[in-house]
Amino acid sequence: MGLNFKELIVKQEISLKDLQGRILAVDSMNLLYQFLTTIRSPDGSVLTDAQGRVTSHLIGLFSRTTALMEQNIKLALVFDGKAPEIKRKTWEKRTAVKQEASLQLKQAQEAGDQGEMRKFASRTAVLTKDMISDAQQLLRALGLPIIQAPSEGEAQAAHIVKQGKAYACVSQDYDTLIFGAPLVVRNLSVEGKRKKAGKLAYETIKPECIYLKDILTHLNLTQDQLILLAILVGTDYNPGGVKGIGPKTGLKLVKEYAHDVDALFQKVEWEKHSPDVAWREIYDTIKQMPVTDDYTLEWKPLDEQKLIQLLVQEHGFSMERVNAKIEKLREAAKQQQQKGLQSFF
Image (tube, rainbow, N blue to C red; front, side):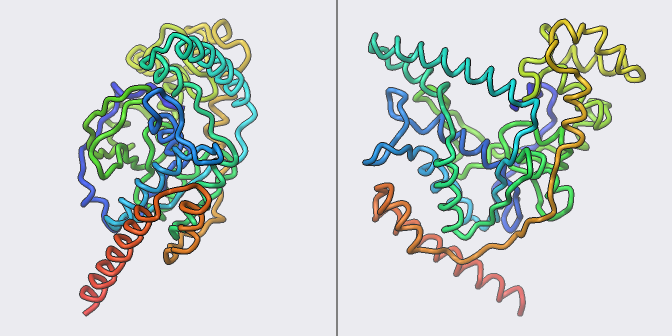
């Protein structure tokens, strides 16, 4: 969703050491889209193998997950299931946006403007079923658990953390908060830098954690009111929210109409701005999002043969690079085992 909550969020900088030995539930679709939009050629085109199959997401996923595994951070990857029916309208709008970006990309290509090509190329990113399948094969070869959500992955990740089965959710977006995630980790990167989408530049980042209870206390809101605020500023089910209402105005209105929610949405002329969907349908969709307890958090040994087959033989990765990473993972696993034995005795 990418909720526009940035200016309202209370966050704390942390180090990767704070997460060592912790189980983190990762919003996998969010992660894959990050790689797909940022790992590109100078002209903005995605990276591909010899058969023309996209590999940008695999390059990012392999690099990021293995680096975190070396730090003894236990990742559990959550994938989206069936989207709520009201999300289809969002898909239609996003498709229109991507089509417009494709036209602008073509114009930039004809003009030979690499800056514009990079900018518009990242806006055309599409994560296909084949890409998701390849990503899951890679994760299984690394021995990481995959959790299939019945619907939205953010809601399932939040559910796992609420159950106490994981320490935190991992996502760049704030969406897991409206599903009640007690703790969210952003900027989870070993490199300490992030490539800007559509640009060649990088920005320095530090991991940060966001506690839901701190946000609710800071804003003096209940969880239900946080959902109402999200609806005002825009969710995946009503992108852009109510025209003219940003986070601060939305916060003021939610508090002003704390005891009369119907009056709140009459005040903002909801039906005028969003005639196709009722605010209560969005609210109920978020509150009643399906989740499952049918998952297993089990980390298995690295399948080196499968990893080499997928990355080197199928997608043309460097054998030297993959073997070097395998050796690092072996060494990390050995060190973690030794620490475990030392603590036992």
